[in-house]
Length: 278
Image (cartoon, rainbow, N blue to C red; front, side, top):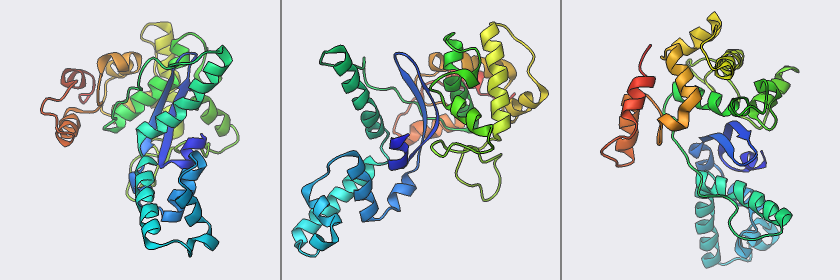
């Protein structure tokens, strides 16, 4: 949660399991690009020691004594750190390193703690976002270590439901701001009660291992995302198995791969089968 306060990266959902973590992130590059030099340096110094010149620049009494060459170095460092502050790789690096150090200290050993580099997938539309969030929020239920989403420890769904009992949304999580509309504020494009009901009903079906009743309200949410109930359940059961890369409807998947310079989009068959209009 501390990292989300410093980075221009919002947390949509998370689940901390016994041997791995899941996070759904929203990168807000425009926010970081609008930060002043002072704000960038101040934020970066909350994470790392920085450079002696950047520390000097932040001291107004010493800044006036710096020459042009030193000021240019600080400007260069500022732009380098600004990019890092909306870089998901740096976010995950600073998330994972302290965990690895603490675990190695507790175990009295050294060396690699994590099996490999984190895996990331781009979410290209609302259906992919909702499916991935539900997949993450239901991880403890699917693993059999929690009976309901709201009782699952170390998850965003528990934090959100606890906050909802007192009528507010957690400040450290990207808020639900309602269905898409004109002048849409920054946030998740769903109504929280709809999403909560959707997760709850999906969790019932996954836990029972068979199709069950889904309330009319939850069905409307799924249909609004352009999915069938069967496809939704497949997505939230086996999201990582069905998609190895970006997730989204076919036209968005093609645009994404064109943007990153790949001629052949991966996952086309899965997106046609699971993300086609209901």
